Image 1: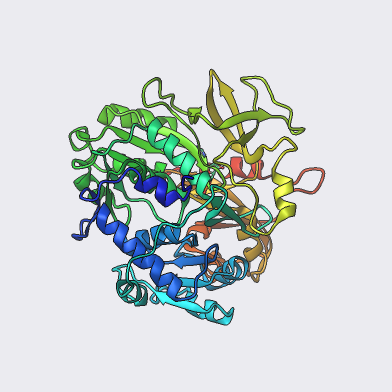
Image 2: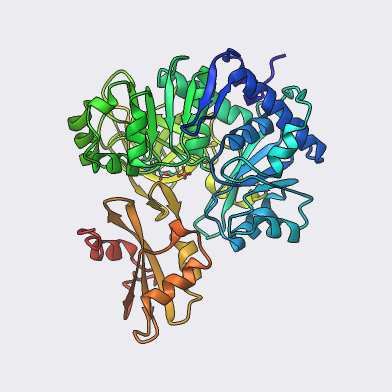
Length: 503
Ligand code: AMP
């Protein structure tokens, strides 16, 4: 019987002497080394009492050891639970209480104090990992024997647990199985023509599905090379591009590259593919990029709950403003509010079904029932349209804000601001911003004397990750509402659309 462990699926395509990963800092790892080190990580986790199916929560920056930890978890059948390093102490309290990890790996220099939070909640094992790889995690796994086998896993066994904020303000756990990620990985790397001689320039964060499953996965599925950068920096990416064949990014990366006078066709000469996702790529960005470099960016659409759903084709028309066509095993339909499919060209709810779609929320059966239809389609929360097979996303049903490629759910920010002195009611919206795509803006009813923008922002800074902070706080006498008393955010968005026009 074949092993459905995602690690086994990847490893079937590796050649030991091939180089898997390099960094500008001089790290170099072959696939053979990856195999040994991930076995050491799995052995090490077992020695701490981590059992099959247990969660391993990780709140650290990007490092080579981070990749080893992820692969060690897959190998041993542990559930990898990545967390944004920007999460604050109170956010971590919720995640740890909900995920109940058997072990936490955290950065001791992060002000979120994950170790304290974990200890208070009774987590048995806490290891440290800094951005340079130092810490008790490395000390521990380097001493482990490295004999752990690739555990036999069923496709439905859990590989990872990621969280996405819910519109109710409470983040929901999204467990992804070995088959969810593995089947998607195989289809995606085939769709994008990944080969052993590809070099992927990886500047994405690793706590999100884009960097972790979409980007790294294509490398691991094709046994190719990843050039692993600690973060996105336009000048560094321009220096590195000429040695790469593929780059994946969020739209903000592409607008920043275009804003850099050094970015031109010559620096892109080795690249065969640029992809974009996690937020809408503006049509003017797509066209400007083509004019500057000769490359048409391949825009694709995915989400944590489903990994990748659609992509523009490698061969064939890459249509600006669309997210392309569904992957082979993804069923995607546009439905009305009663879940009945709509004809092409009509706007409705984007609903999806397929082996890539998660099965149920972590310990929230009522939420699962809400978000799946009777015939097993998942309601993405996005509004869209299909024309000649190409999917366009026209809006987000749930008012999600995507700022710099990261999701901000207004309700979560509103709940914090509503606690702030001087604010009687906050409405949080996304406003077009040249750099971030959208910027978070809070429109607040409050007493003009006590509602100080700086105070409200400081209040929020202590309670929310930096990417969720409102860039502006605007005091108003009242908010526009519909007959049901709901704030009409569409009117607010229109009113403040030009707020960052000169930014
Ligand atoms: P996440 O779970 O963080 O990956 O966010 C998923 C959401 O990002 C989707 O439901 C979409 O609203 C949005 N998204 C992802 N890719 C695109 C895209 N290419 N264009 C527009 N929105 C996108």
